[in-house]
Amino acid sequence: MNRWSKLGDIGRPQCLRRGRGSSYVKYLFVGATMVLALLPPVVRAQDIEGGKAVFKKCAACHNADTEANKVGPSLKGVVGRTAGTALGYSYSKAMKDMGAAGLVWDEPNLMEYLANPKAKVPANKMGFPGLKNPDDVKNVIAYLKSVSG
Ligand code: HEC
Image (cartoon, rainbow, N blue to C red; front, side, top):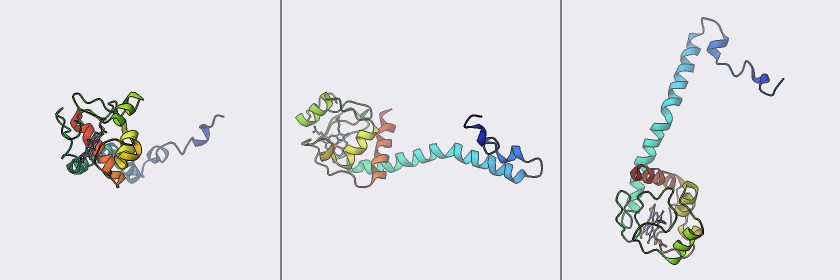
């Protein structure tokens, strides 16, 4: 007996366990499956829309859809990029050193940086206090991914 065999009947959907006459259960099961199948893309689209609105706070200093640098470096393709490596941008020593030490802007590192830039990269020169709402951070990352292609 392995540890799964206990689950036996529980793992099987209702509609297969009962015979005919329980069709409402079947519809429930099919309905739930459809909702689950539809859910992730819908949530993602909302995240991107939300992130686009949040990005207005960043847009004074950053482009996300072109490689042009502004006061801050271009954020096109920033998700997955090593810190301090946008072409032609003059970073602070702090940011270049973090990149040289191996900091890559994956999602967990971006979450930390955007919540509190000065804590994640002390002495970096981004003049922005950070985003207080974790949902804003999550959404702006979804937006950055969506425009970076
Ligand atoms: C007032 C201008 C300003 C605002 C507003 C701002 N940033 Fe920045 N950002 C900068 C500067 C300047 C740097 C470069 C920091 C350095 O070299 O130390 C930077 C760096 C970054 C980096 C690191 C990029 C790299 O190539 O290593 C990320 C990611 C980033 N900003 C994201 C954002 C996001 C997202 C927002 C909005 C929520 C935002 N920033 C708002 C000025 C700003």
